Image 1 (cartoon, rainbow, N blue to C red):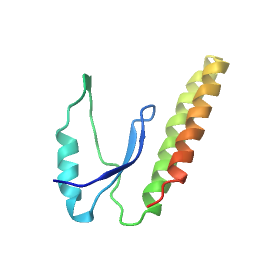
Image 2: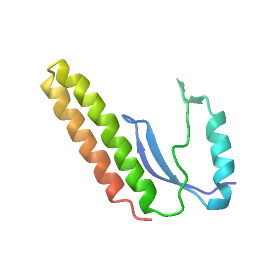
Image 3: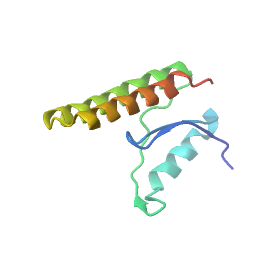
Image 4: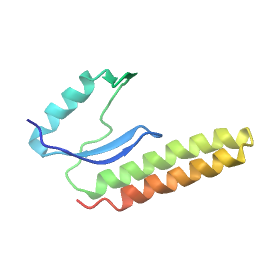
Length: 104
């Protein structure tokens, strides 16, 4: 049995942060790579990074969330959909707040 805590999970970006004992990391990585479905949806999971400190994964998650949302917002700006831009910006702010407030 692997004991873990999901510290962050965002459906829009597809990112998650999972806290797990260092010695169990390999087992979790193997399990995630074998997962092909979540509910009725196909899934492809990969590990972006493995870190010892709490600060490093938070910084990496913040960078990824910003990168993904900026890309989505840029696409929306091209199509001039103001409401959708506002919604995406609000979602990005909420995701960033959750990451910043993670307390290890």
